[in-house]
Image 1 (cartoon, one colour):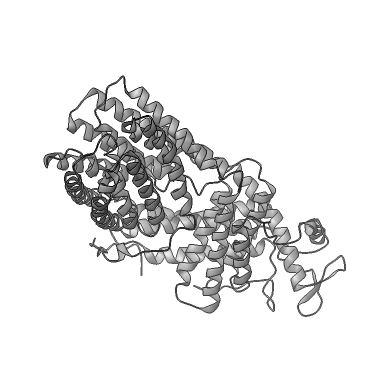
Image 2 (spheres, helix red, strand yellow; image 1 turned 30 degrees about the vertical axis):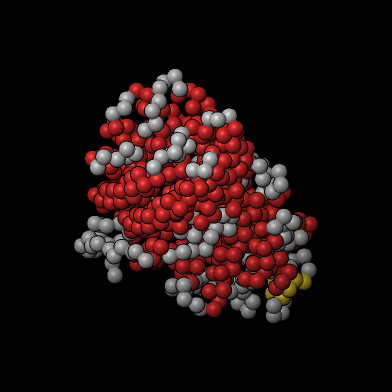
Length: 610
């Protein structure tokens, strides 16, 4: 079926029950949960002892920055956390100054909507998250509706900055104990994903395409983590890079992969012990000498000498296992050369990453503004709740946005019931209030990885308890206001998402297909050229891998959009298959031996997995 023939736009069914289905918790759910408690507790308890718990919302703004960058290497995390804190302070400063200059609710809602759009676009472009822009929008929007004077703003910003510095220290605290913890986790995930794909590919099970896409995405994410720090890599990081290379090998030749061994490596990497070695590093130079003595790049000796064996020009007899080990060592050496070259490449400018996000920014600004205006029209005292609800909805496409709306409404409705049960306890005294806030912080981060609605069950009472820091308020009014603003924000926000559809999504899929085709052709030319350097081949292969991952992400994002022509899904699948075969060919070209019992030339059937 030709993808060039458009079909009429159609409305897709929107999930309800599926949006509430619980998933597996994150492997590191306890890290943000413990970090936010450690970041929030000391400033809040200090203010409580000083009798100024009314200032806790400002310190909490800085403390919540501890939720970010837990998947980044510590060197990169230090920079990301610093930028998050600066971004939080910037949004808070705009909000405080605006609140000082005017009390016009319409103006304040407009400022909040524009801030939410900027925060959404920047967080998406820089891939900061989770929790991405939602925390920043909550902080700035809430501050807009707190009575303020220009003279108070510097002091409140100073409190937020001090708490932000403490949050930075909390986020960096594990570095001395596990300096390579994030890299280890990313590598383990890549190994496990490769093992899962190898099992499905060898067993002919259903879902092989999904497992393959997930494995390539995990490997790509592992490289992103390992390459996030651009200084000279340590010995540990080089060992982790070798393991990610082995995950790539398993993707290229799943029939040759040993899933049990890959999972064993993953378990060892997750711990604190030695990084498992894929080969004896002391034999690397010996392997290089053997190549110079006659071992061809495809791993086959120049003079065949018996089944399963060969003889090099140097006269050494090598069986298939020896060839495989030497080929792996040679490939690891060359891969590391390519990784070093890739590490030196500068990232794309932020401006070029912000351009495609214009529809999302417009959608956020319009939805947040309309939600706030509607809340004001209904007489709400805290329209920022509706604004933040709308801001939290916007995902990559309409279908995901709908799912988030369902999750947000269900989570908030259950959350207000939890708040009604907790409020009498929190009102026993300042210490009880602080402890309830800490418990909600922990519960939100512990549960949100299972499903957003489950985390919202704790986020809702947390937000309501924060409003009681300056003084206790009637529980009934808080519950009623939150329910109304949640429904208004979700409804108006989703309508805005439908009105501002990302009509460029289909064109981006076309461009992604062209990018994959060009990257595949380039990788094939480099692999076919016997004079290609190892660094050039690695760069071409990794560029193709990145293009394939981007194609899948772009197609997934566009698949849920409404009011557009049918997507060229057949071309997407065929492009992925062709790219995977080219990736496999580049891996073979990198020095891996052929499968036992075959020649050095690999033949791939159309549509077969590599």
